[in-house]
Amino acid sequence: MLLIKNIGVLQTPVGSFKHGGEKQGENLKLKNAAVLAEGGRITAVTCDGALPEGWEKADQVIDARGCLVTPGLIDCHTHMVFGGYRQGEIPLKLRGAGYLDILRAGGGILDTVGKTRAATEDELYEKTRAFMDEMLDLGVTTVESKSGYGLDRENELKMLRVNKRLAKSHKMELVSTFLGAHAIPEEYKGRSGAYIDMLCEEVLPVVKAENLAEFVDVFCEDGVFDVEESRRMLEAGQKLGLRARIHADEIEEIGGAVLSGELGAVSAEHLIATGERGMASMAKGGVIADLLPATSFYLNKTFAPARRMIELGIPVAIASDFNPGSCPSLNLQLAMSMGYIKYRMTPEEVLTAVTINAAASVGREDRLGTLEVGKQADLVLWDAPDMEMLIYRFGSNLARTVIKNGEVVKS
Ligand code: NIG
Ligand code: FE
Image (cartoon, rainbow, N blue to C red; front, side):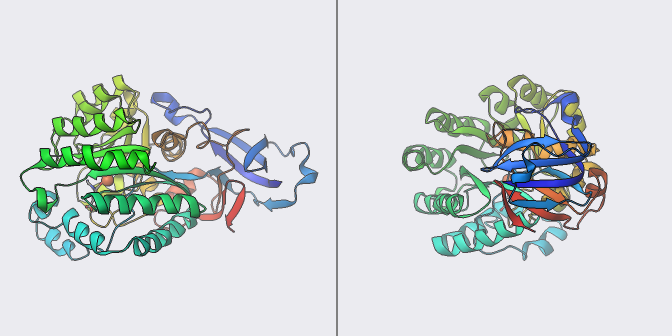
């Protein structure tokens, strides 16, 4: 049994559902609080200096010394399995080449595809494991991980097997997404429809049979997959029981957000260029907006219209988008600060975005994302007295102690 006492402020959203509109900004704040956990679950939460009943039986006691405690952070959008890096693209970018120009010229994602195909499963496993260690150290206790740098049967499956092995072996929880439709591979240049057919007929059934992913995703973008191809890909996944998420309106608004609402996707992601029609469709379909501010920063783009989304009642999540091209940072704390400053979200709204809404975006809202009795004991003790301090100190790692499933994984 684990007791955490002397918590200055315990701050958490409440309830096992995605929080949109005004609810986005509603957090419970308990002063001078304590948490008791047993068997990986929270069994009691108290405040105002009271200790939970039965605390004497705790065999492990952590003194929080008055600090802030929140649920473990959930990073609901990453491309963290990849070969090599792409630091060579930055000078091109600074000379004016656009993200899609680089991709069309065979660079960008396709460059990483070459390096990922050349890597063995074990190499990718080791590299990604180290990234997960780094994330855990930053207070991230659950992560979503997409395939999408294999772009053929063998290599997409290789990436997903890395996900599966890490999900089993790592202390952090991993949610796997099949993103075979991340780019059009050289072998299918000019034949994107045939590539989608191949993914649906030859890869998806194996993903399903071997239980390699819970979600299906697609890069719906100008010059990549259009709306109809995206619809086909996501519907094929949905038919097999995978839930849909979509890279929508990252660079151009071609209708991805509208599609997400029509398909009842769990989330639409990026949304830098999304307008009113897309947002209306998302609101109607109950789609979560997974926003990725560090990518806006790194691509030198504008920032997604987060305030308008909240106004429309769309639940907003914030994630890192960690990948070797558009966002080589896995620091979710940094993305939180950007949500504060660039999206103008309040500290409470930001916390909801990286906890319960992110949990809902990965289908884990029943078990993760809040600090309540019955939920999994995933928590972070911060080197900060409150949320305001945590997101104000951008760029530093303020995670002091990280607890995953009732176990101290960083102290
Ligand atoms: O989310 N947009 C597509 N995929 C990634 C970028 C991947 C890459 O550049 O390697 C993203 O930004
Ligand atoms: Fe992405």
